[in-house]
Length: 124
Image 1 (cartoon, helix red, strand yellow):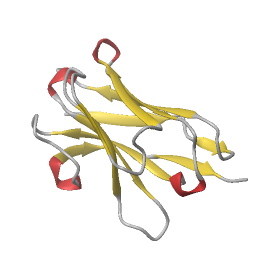
Image 2: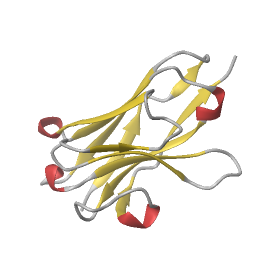
Image 3: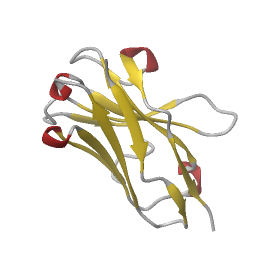
Image 4: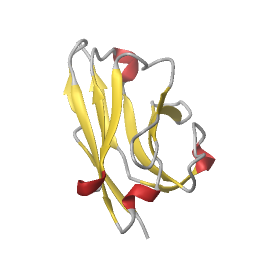
């Protein structure tokens, strides 16, 4: 029903920036709240950021607030994660997810559809 494909990851140095993109296929993209999660080696998947269906509300984890910005362009069926001032602890596979309802929040179970992830590595 919904297919998500992440892109934009890579290897960068601390302090650098990256912009991740998540392209969605399917109709009514604007009906889905969208989120980014990440998972570092040996750790649980962690919530990063969420944006509501038309982009009027955003929510961030404390670890990225002030550095990352989530946004969406529903005309392009795409959600973005602009990551600035990257730190080594941001190193992870980043996953895009589409939620089921307006109330989808910061837990994995709130989301029905997942991309396969894009690797972000921050290292000096």
